[in-house]
Length: 271
Image (tube, rainbow, N blue to C red; front, top):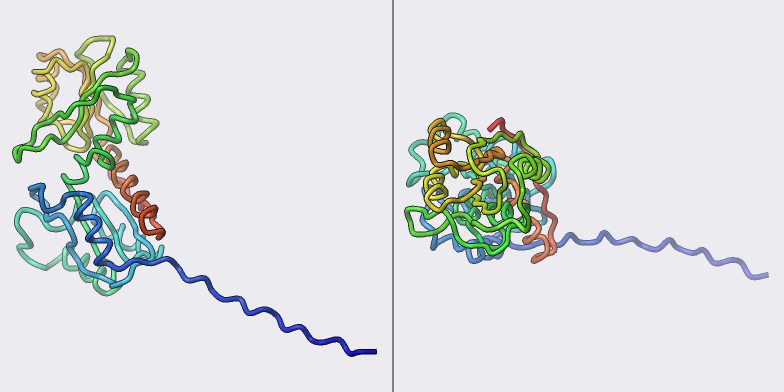
């Protein structure tokens, strides 16, 4: 009787994680978002250089220590944010909270990439197009002329007339924040304009164009009387919450393009 041969267990090889170089990812972001073409008070682009190879990207609305710590815990080598840490021409000093933020990023090899207006106005991935899509707007046109000659947002028509209450509920469900409103316009709403975040500077344009409803992020004190006298409805969906969808869409785009993992880092604010 033949002795049974011992069968060696198969060697299980760890599957390598998909990865991309920092340079390739930054190049894609710069090209897709037209970073060098869109003037902004934010220093858009790579603000802090980290690891050369990236297997996971975290995405957040705001550059802050809480978001960086989450990114580190979840194994991210890059964090992409809407609100970065360098504004108005550059750093004035490297002290206090800003020093501690940069120290944490450098120590843990995490790159920081920021995209402010380029992400707001992107026609496929931007915060404003995401609001327009969430509301189902049709016949979209540019809205909200910015000082650099770019339109930030969109205006369009609802497929069927809505009310301030029904549209407020859509905004609340889609973006998850507390919603407030000014009910000074027509009861039946057809024509809507949208700019995420702090878009209230475009309210006079919405009034001039006889828009039924203006959707933005956070209120400004002067909006009340301007909207009342201009006979327009306004919905505020929260600065933070109306600026999540573009960041999330950018993460999906990166994941599909490079096959790497991406994760939205939810660090909400009260505004």
